[in-house]
Image 1 (cartoon, helix red, strand yellow):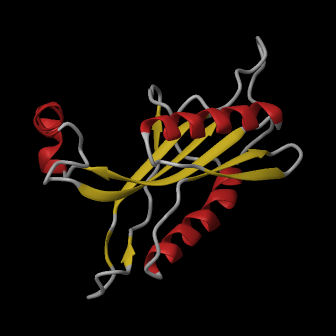
Image 2 (cartoon, rainbow, N blue to C red):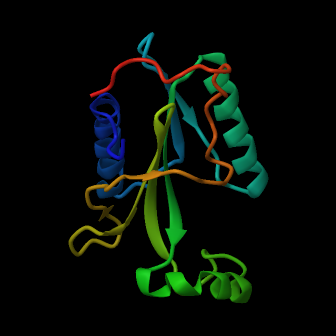
Length: 174
């Protein structure tokens, strides 16, 4: 399964539209996770902090805790970040060594990142944030093209509790 099941798209598409509306109104995105359980229909919003490395770690741990507490079967994360333009991606390690971080690099570009972690897989989309029209304050992004990741590492992955041994993904998703 390489496309996000429709059940999840129905849930996340309005959240993506809200994120776009926030940027287009001239505001900044606040990192947020939506921790949900399709069986009982509950979704919990978790505001996260990216103020420091420890704040990011604490935010990820809070999401993991709430996902376990609510027996979540999906976590959808929205956050802004810095990335590199395609033509500089091959120099990633060199740029990190020289500047210490992507954010400190003169090549950085603003991006918005969406991750959907489910029992069926991890889908990720990142789009460059660009000015909306001639405004310096209002920004926007294009339509996210989610890709299924078979392997991922980092503090904001593996947010769902481990399924019980032998447990398969539940429900039929179309």
